[in-house]
Amino acid sequence: MMDGFRSLFASPEKPCGVGLVLREGTDGSLFVAEVIPDGPAELAGCIAAGDVLYEVNGANVYRVDPRRVAAAVLGPEGTRVRLAFKRGARYADDRPFAVDLTRRFVLGAGKLEMLSS
Figure 1 (cartoon, one colour):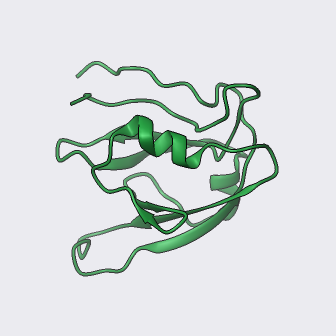
Figure 2: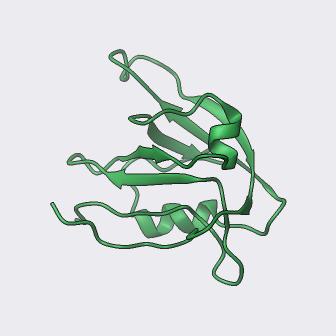
């Protein structure tokens, strides 16, 4: 299992994304490590560091390989993607909250890299 990865989710042809840096937790879930300033995620105003990515376009991605998750989020500039997250102490009991984001150019988007422990 990877210690973590950095992804701003974008197509390989032209970097477009949602402006998130995700990390893989010890349980295999992907959580928001950083919301990129002025990116689609920050402009949505409801995604915060620590939120756990749970669904992409209605498909459960909890504990799914990060490369598969990135592939599910990738898309052409100007298209929309629905991400759903869970947050907080009542994580197990709460339903995911969904956010519709429009992909756009984000510097460094689409990059996956191993992060040291």
